Length: 266
Image (cartoon, rainbow, N blue to C red; front, side):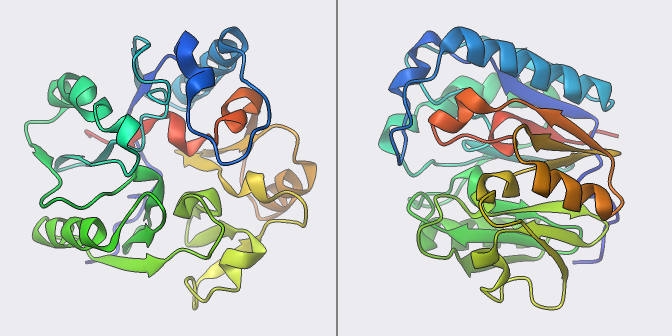
């Protein structure tokens, strides 16, 4: 696949979903206490505002009480300028989320296709760079699903590569992000895995691994609140930043990238 400058961070649109009152019933690897749905919605509102300030047109979908994790819209779909791919999340409780999102995808894309086969892929395991799309294997993304997605992306003209996610990492993007302009932000475990060999990698300072999940949105990088060392290294690398609270999302294994589907229609 040819290098496509800005593919990974130049966007015009985003889809988000308001957190439901049932969000406290969402999946989590570690019990850090129940999130407050009211506070979560306040934080989500700031997130949507930051996307709009960055130049996005944002669709805010209504909450889905039957699906506690449904505010993490990145997992059941993946979007490219050519169309949208309906994924098959690896957690059984989330399998119906894609059906609920279909109309929102069809509003923007003439081409909306289902992930082929019977394998599973979570969007949190897909890292889009400007020259390759990396698909990480995890507890939520299996090899059958990853290879099926890679074949589909190849048919669309994209190079995709499947990678082993280091042990103990929930989603591939839990431990890394693209800052754009050829720069990767990653935890030490991810940086030392060899996955990004030959690329410029900025390592997340010790004790701030959660802050590896940031998102570059056009000209700014959104960074979670409470991680001053990571914020400093991103700024020192020359990137403009906006700090956002993600305290409630974190309680149910969520981060900044999970909360939106970002794509370009220009």
